[in-house]
Length: 392
Image (spheres, one colour):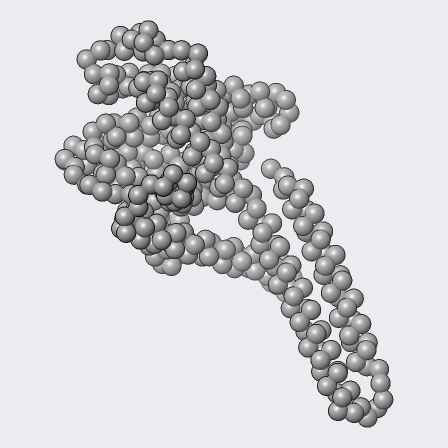
């Protein structure tokens, strides 16, 4: 993926600005070398002032170039994050209409439709030359597809068996589970400061979203299965991109044909939902007779197109960052939705929820600061390697 042209223009502008600063500073240096051999007090003051201006211009040049460089380095992850937040927020709104207004109580079947549209959309993009398809090993694609299906099936059962409060708790637990799996399976550890920042964020999210946590033993086990399913699916997306040396587009278009038959096999789980209980496969015919309309079909189609955008943004974001950062972005999206509900729609917000939102955002900002520092350190180490090699 190439960087946007506007960022390159910013870089060129920064170079022009740096050159301007250099000319001005050189002029200041030339001016301070001119004059009489025994300058007066006014002349000394003027020269000191010019030296101060010279130092200020060089500092401004350094910090300005550094800031623009950081923006360029993080432009794509930031763009993918915003892309994912917008796509997920939109699909949540549309899916509420699909389920509530049109009574389409078949979530796994809806995901299957999403995957079909995603496959067709990505194949069309490849055919138009937006990216080049890559042949990938079927075994690896089957593993990724199986993890995705497991995640969706476990999430559906989790929502069906447990209360909304414990369902929210299980979503929160995905983040530390990602950290644990990364450490146990791939020996990827996180710093203590990162753990603290994530902990602060999770405390805030819990205060803002969790109300009741009543759960049975079976419900707890189902919830933990859903937590593991979500974590391993997110980790595998990033791991497979690196292992197979495939872009997000290439992996997405390659694995969707494997996902579709798996989803069709588990789609009868939809019939276990309370809205379809006791009706069996007749529930599909009942929906077609009572709720199917042109508006319903169009809404499901819009949901499917948004599903393509959600899948694409997820693969792009995880590939450019990590599964942990993807989780942080997900929690940030939840907080933004709560804030929008208060500001735009005037939703009631308790002091507990307000405190939770504030604490969660503090954790997000802390995590972002840590990541920017880690990137700067990694860049400095990479720049020092050629010098070290030359000395050796």
